[in-house]
Length: 88
Image 1 (cartoon, helix red, strand yellow):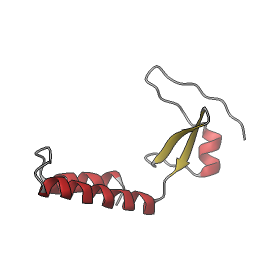
Image 2 (tube, helix red, strand yellow):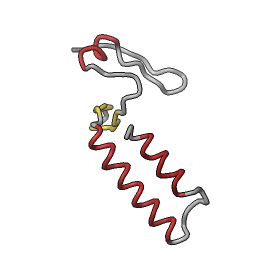
Image 3 (cartoon, helix red, strand yellow):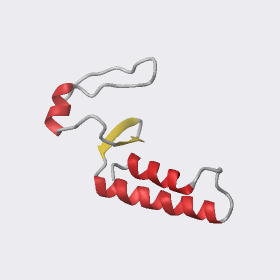
Image 4 (cartoon, one colour):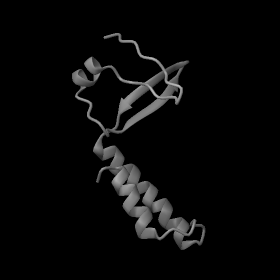
């Protein structure tokens, strides 16, 4: 299916309604975006991938916290935000 959209002045795009419906994309879903040979590619991220990513980021945050390289934010707050972002 080929649809057209355009880039807003804020760098945003709209995924056409027909495509959102066909793929059952819901507001708030996480998508990965990458470039490949001059093209932009979007992919839906599963909750499993997001949970794994949140866990990896949480581990990295813990390492920064325990070695004194954190940015001064309480660790519980950082972990909670990572899990909320991942929808866990």
